[in-house]
Image (tube, rainbow, N blue to C red; front, side, top):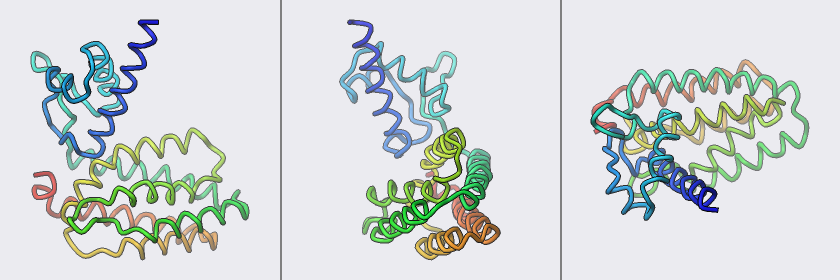
Length: 223
């Protein structure tokens, strides 16, 4: 029973710590000291250590010799790599869904787009709206829900979550005015009309604009 309880506690700490990293409550590069983590998560040493090692395997935490753990830093190289890999996999999934999708798939896309349209990306204070983020994910996943590959969808989800740190950093300061709703509308229309070329082009513009915005004022975004 003790072993099961320890694993359960470790899983709880893992989820909380992972969420804090992905949502930038723990900033990139933050030193993760056991004393601070025990107080923050009200947990013992063993569950925290296990959670940290799992996060090291997920590339969200790094372990440095003689220095301990810290939140993985962000970099321009990782930003581009994550975004473009995600784009390629999502494009493949969308292509397959356009071929295989039925009326239920199309209806779900319309419903998810409608839900997303009711929320603005940022709050009045400029932070990423917590209600917008899950609906954005649901909309994008609905576009390729008919791809027929759980593995492909899972990899897209992992990359989306990894990229969410950059999206939150980017949401703090938009380098230019951007009509996210229009980008989503263009993407939605192209997929629903089964115009594969237009859908992939719209997705590429969507991803590239985010990359360009972040890179344009990198030091301001990550400061």
